[in-house]
Image 1 (cartoon, rainbow over the protein chains, first blue to last red):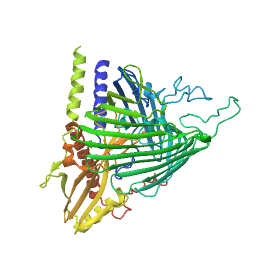
Image 2 (image 1 turned 30 degrees about the vertical axis):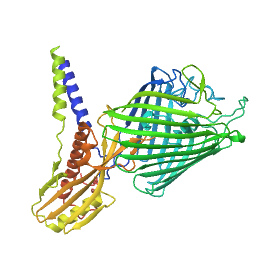
Image 3 (image 1 turned 180 degrees about the horizontal axis):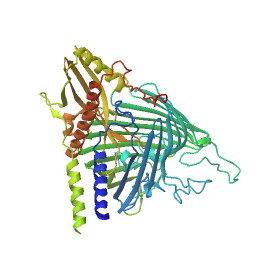
Image 4 (image 1 turned 45 degrees about the vertical axis):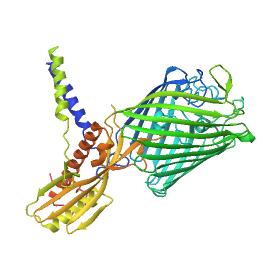
Length: 365
Length: 194
């Protein structure tokens, strides 16, 4: 009798769950006004792995991630949760693996210098913030968030190319702070916020070893979003602080046709106390040749102030097979002699050019 | 062992029974449509017109209805779709549509059509948001989506239309024009009468 009851219970659970799965999708932040109930708990994430081969036989190109030469290596497991009830919401996103730990996240244990000891005991946090819609147009958000600056992001799902640009590697990854966003219309919005004194830190901190010397929340950030025509969005960004320096950034993308998209990122950064900086520009044309295959090129010019430059050409394809995207990519970088990275050829001799091929697989859910 | 097999059979049968066939059909212009004609005996066209407008004001609170003809109103709105390729649920896009209601004496009809799908992507902050500049009709979606994905969106759209249509039919069948649209009278207990 107990077993029969168990069978019946399981059957009922299956029926209920499968019916729930086919319920009308009528909820959500944008959803219909016919049934303005709160959206469900959203769970999403990704897994990525890659193999890279540098034609010199050595790892050369020094941008973030995809760093291992001739190795089947892992990126990260990314797990994100989001829930919105009424006007309040939260996002929590954790990542595990090289891409989501020591290659992109600070160390949580060393408040004095979380950057140089990155990844030793990481909190694994990509995003962790709470948000409140004061009105339909005005939003307040506080916590640890992906940076608002730049074209590329840490998650491989958010990038077309698997390897990353020099602009991405040298810019901020995350900013912890408080920001307010006002949408004047669908075409114009403005964000302004105050963030911890350094980028990529869970807490503000001081470089002094005296524990009584605290950090502060002194980096100002702002973003003006413009959408002048359908399919074209442009973000004018600035982050400025006496500790973190000042970066001006333009990130824009235009879906010219259903198949062709053109993106652009340009930025200039000045480190504090005349400590140098960088400038660069990257262009991202992409062409979808079928519903499963898209080709794209990233052309980038990047220079350190008074310290050489590098040009990178990356040819990438995204091949979608269900939830998996295969990303074959070939990349050629050519630098000036003064550029601080070292490229070596197959004989181990110093050279100014490097080339690599990689293939990555990204599963998004 | 027999019980395990029986359980597995039950589960498989349940899934099969719940696999929805899309409720959408194609109209004479080869556009997807959800179409219903409803008899409403002893109801004048004017009263049905007023109820249809009240439905719009009460349910579609932003009042997006447009009078497109004599006793014809069109309402533009949108619904969310959810991912089908993943084993977890998250928003995958929105489908904009037009709901049209036309009334006559003793009957009315309504239909959902002009379905346009705009896919979402996950942004850097972990939110699913529209991809700028990408939108296409459901009729052309076969060239952009996997068959399984398209079938699922057609199912979700059909189920949504049925649910909303059932709400419309329930609303139109009630005699509530004297009450404020969209509100139900609060039931009160009279303790003096017992």
